[in-house]
Length: 61
Figure 1: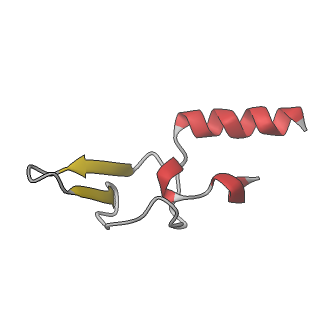
Figure 2 (figure 1 turned 90 degrees about the horizontal axis):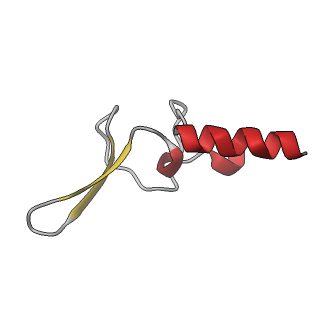
C-alpha cells in the first residue's frame, strides 16, 4: 500500500512556491532539491492526511 502513496507530492516537505514573475518552483524543503510531484526518495515522510488515508485503507481491508 505504501507504494501507492509514496511520492513527493504526499510528503510533508513538498513545497510549491510562486515567484514574483509568476514562475513556480516545485521542491523539497528539507533537501533543497527541485522535484516533481511523482518523484520518489527514500526520505519520504508522508503528510498527516496521507497517514490517515493509509490507515483507513488498511483498516478497511
